[in-house]
Length: 146
Ligand code: ZN
Image (cartoon, helix red, strand yellow):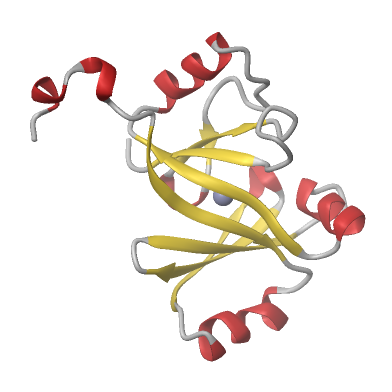
């Protein structure tokens, strides 16, 4: 449906859950379970140097699972594993327009880790909302394509 027929006010900020990020100590150790035992479609590994992680992408229906392996002890994911152990690290919602989404959250008083989009895996643009604002869940906004 053309967006003009839906009306500005009813446009959702979030369009779907894009992926769930899972912090792992080693992709070599974690990947076989997700790819072979659970049978997820493996879409490859990409290094995201900005975040000091190697990311393995797995497809489940229209959503993805990201396995995140830190590439440096200074990586935020390494610090997360040190504090909490491996496990669910963040939840990523897809947005149609990341600048609009960031501006709305800031206007509503949310605390952002990123007040500007940065580069994520697979050519996405991402921004993190601070877990203090999202009640303990590190929340990623993710815009696919440019
Ligand atoms: Zn993510």
